[in-house]
Figure 1 (cartoon, helix red, strand yellow):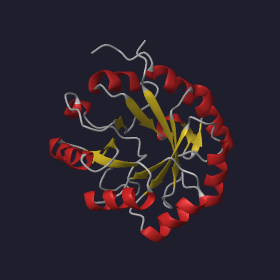
Figure 2 (tube, one colour):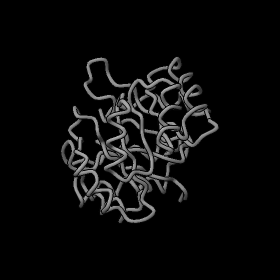
Figure 3 (cartoon, one colour):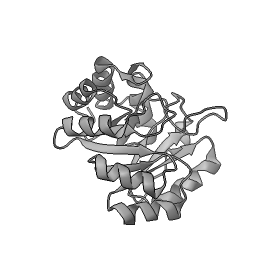
Figure 4 (cartoon, rainbow, N blue to C red):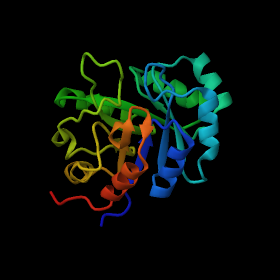
Length: 218
């Protein structure tokens, strides 16, 4: 058993999903505020979900290239613990959001090849955490949650000065291998624990978290 792996279940839309995450032992839940996503939730729904979360289950708000007006409304209406920037936000914008709202910022960075890895170093200097995600296909509408992986060997020997999460196509079947190959201490999943887009499966959530506790050997 490998203790200490922290799991983030992203894209929750229902109270029962929050309960399933808490019961499974997840560390974070993600609420998606990107309108094009099948996991999108309104501020009213998100506020109710956030209130359902027990103490100790961190609430992350995922936004994509959001302006100050949108974020002002979000912060006023939904109690969050982290802001996740999942668009093309610049390092300067990451700093602006951190300063303006006083919450830790997770910056998602898409990786497809070795050239993309350099951006991780850049964002690690300004974000509180980085989320190493698979770069979406060129035809994709969504910046994440596409169920695709990247070559984990690209980051197998990499470490950063801030905590980081591994994301991109993770499932109960492959997350142990992903942890073993990358050394990740935190993992993020969305589509990999769904019965259908936006509808989480409590059994898959439980299986995913359990799989993170017994990673396979390299």
